Length: 298
Image 1 (cartoon, one colour):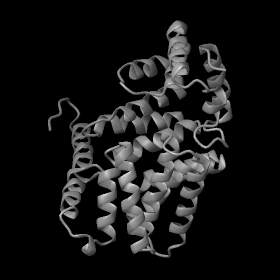
Image 2 (cartoon, helix red, strand yellow):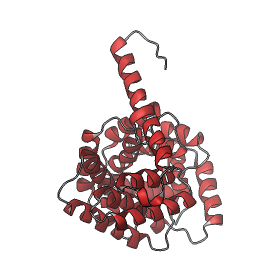
Image 3 (cartoon, one colour):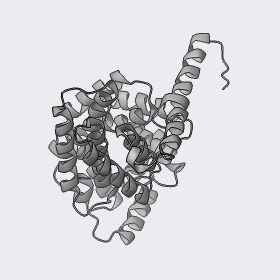
Image 4 (cartoon, helix red, strand yellow):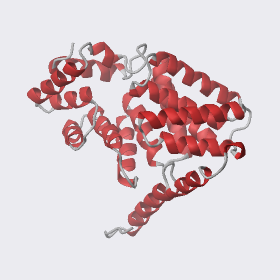
């Protein structure tokens, strides 16, 4: 790992952050080695942490099938260890992700289930620092969809980030929370940190960064970031294109998406993913929807 420059302290910090991300983070090498080890164990010998590791190894492959496998693993573990706050929190994360990714026919039901699991985890009297961090982290992701409470969501995000400030995965996830709540400078800072320090950067990290740029009024940066992605949020990119004067491109994005999703409407965007609560703060939502209408979504 090499760094160049004249500021020794900055270089040392950059190396330390990259070392944490590559070794100690949720997707770090230490976790990878632990996951390899737990898959060598027989099912009757599995402990609570083994179920955590096996489920995480599947979930973090980010495929529909792997998320289904993670749900089976964490559900089995939670039934075997009913007092496990960790497995309840991870199941809450999974059900929230199902809603966000459109992997369920009833996203509202999955979001409510996620909240119920978080409440059950909270009721467990003793939680490790890891469990406390994950509880705040996942609750921050779920709250707006479940209740529409942006302030509470940001409080949870800030508590999670204060507990573990150097994890790229949580930083980029929580950047979305803070961006949607209008804390755009924080969102950009956290998302840029994640993209800079993660060993292998998935498209969705850069997608969250592009969204943070867009909400922060940095539309040119948003378009440039979206242009480098194979997979991206179509309405998000369309709004970025509208705001940079590329109306024809914005309308082409929306028109193409409407061919695939014929019943797609502006209300689907406004109430994403729960169908009950707006995902974006009012002062940001109004201009966002207006730009989507300009791009051709009604």
